[in-house]
Image (tube, rainbow, N blue to C red):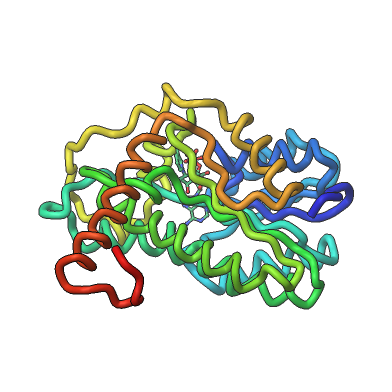
Length: 274
Ligand SMILES: NC(=O)c1ccc[n+]([C@@H]2O[C@H](COP(=O)([O-])OP(=O)(O)OC[C@H]3O[C@@H](n4cnc5c(N)ncnc54)[C@H](O)[C@@H]3O)[C@@H](O)[C@H]2O)c1
């Protein structure tokens, strides 16, 4: 979607961090922005600071009805939605042996169902318009995994898979897709994930696992600018950090080596020589 001027963007989790960075970047590109967050005071602050056409909205992405209400509010106010950034997300560090089922449910409901609800609520509208773009925030943890990030990366790997399939599904229908996979970004992720966690998801356990040092990360502003470039240019993977390049290459090499090893041992299923 090359021309962003005057078009409408909905950004979830835009009251803070990467979402705020995206909201600022799309506003600077001339878009009208719906600043959506479960923390309404943060959404109000960002929208007021952006001024102009920005609209603050409360939303809980873990609930489909809330995301549908966000879509209806955006449509009522602006008459269309051209860019959806499914960005809201939370983090918990826990070993799988210790994690409570409520830890899993919190991460899956916000991180994964949050994206699913966004796609469910907004994709039909974009297909009907014949124009749109969806950016899903995964993480570098959607491409590589390791403890104590197992719960978190489960949700983020799923977002990468969902986004790859969505890209193929909508490629010839005027709707673009990008998946954002940052490394460390200097945001409020670690504290805000606990501040907005509903009591129903609180297992009452302190897992005492080291949190990622997000304060050492890059600026959310830089991430926002790279997202705008991807939307304009139709870029799919938005991988803001090159620090993990060799680990990703090693992971893929291991997968390919396993394919070759199994084909040698059990025979090729594709008829090709290995
Ligand atoms: N900070 C990093 O290093 C990093 C790296 C890779 C990916 N990410 C991802 O980036 C996204 C944004 O996180 P961030 O780092 O900017 O953190 P952040 O806490 O600064 O911003 C996340 C925002 O999402 C909101 N939110 C949380 N639950 C919500 C819900 N149920 N409904 C609506 N809004 C909700 C929070 O209130 C917060 O304003 C997340 O998906 C996160 O997993 C972050």
